[in-house]
Length: 179
Image (cartoon, rainbow, N blue to C red; front, side):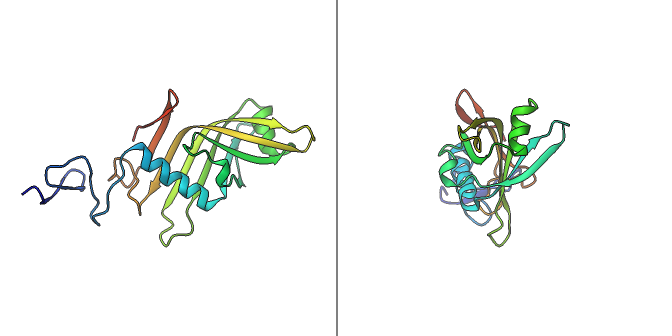
């Protein structure tokens, strides 16, 4: 009896026997619910994709997006920060430093897999460090919110709501899953 699979009718998730600690999807793969598997999968996607869309707010109050290449070594292991190298005289630097709009968003999408079904959105506050050479600059984003949707690994809201992403927020220096 303890080895029988049971389906939760409300969620469509499967459980083995009386153990409710690990849900499984209809393809029998484990559904990651904690913060650690979401962070690991999100970082793996971001470092594999390499190119992200970075959105800032212009002086006129409109969003502006452009492609940036944070690269693997510039995404913190715990996804608490992301660093982007750029030039000092770019619109992204102007938007962050010159207009008081330091909130930014980085967006990675998996275009490599067959379904193109995974994406990560990291939102946070940006700071700019200007190099002494007058040319180079470094933008560091302190990530405060991370959203991810990955149908292949079943990372969605609550592991079953395929219309909502999994959402993590930084609180007191630690990630907390809020959806």
